[in-house]
Image 1 (cartoon, rainbow, N blue to C red):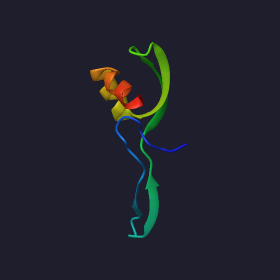
Image 2: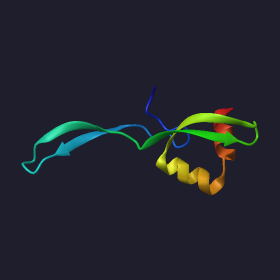
Image 3: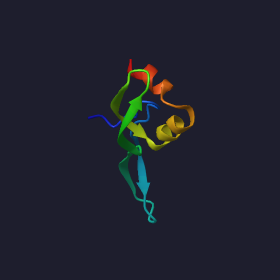
Image 4: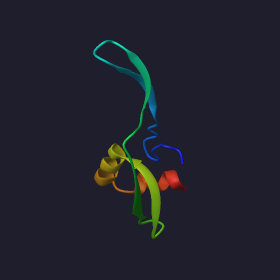
Length: 72
């Protein structure tokens, strides 16, 4: 499965880990994703989605209406 947030579209980013000796090593920075079952009131069912921590805060604040639009 891909490591992409359904709501915000966050994806892995690539960069360097830099040591104290200034050695650069390429690395992949993963988004903070969680698999959640969320109740969609409009469809009267649970939906299993991968969400970032920021997306969970957005849903807590605004509700699941925005998520329901994306899943249709």
